Length: 210
Image (tube, rainbow, N blue to C red):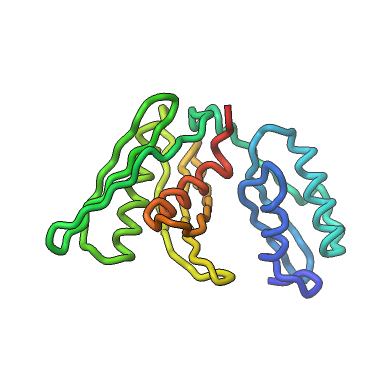
């Protein structure tokens, strides 16, 4: 669907890049925006977020968006997720027995260590997935509420002559499913970069430094 020749996905991406916005859905009919549904954090009130959306859309796309068409739902991540710190990587382990790989991830959070192991066939893509799953398990063991993270995918891509891991993670919180993404450039240790990409997805929208 398009508005004035602009794809609604482009508008969604612009709104999604605004502070406190987690996700956005734009609905259009006959070249007009009829609804904008936004999920946002509750660090600011909905009116401020709505004004930001109007300003961003008119300045970038020259589309005057009626505030009555903007619906903002807010979620308190700190209450629903129960965390305020950023975990650190303590170690990432890898061993091979025959054609089976075993990985281990240790994360340090508030002076407490969380460890998770996973095993499976020793193929590059599967090892990346095992590492990402182990990282997610550590994070889920840290949290003290019913909110949970789910790994959607992990992939290594080539970008500007650099290898980069891209992680997709869903957060199930307060009956909402929120998609998060993170990246990590591969430096020396490829396996640590997988863990960093998953943590980047989680840290970006959910965790706040002490």
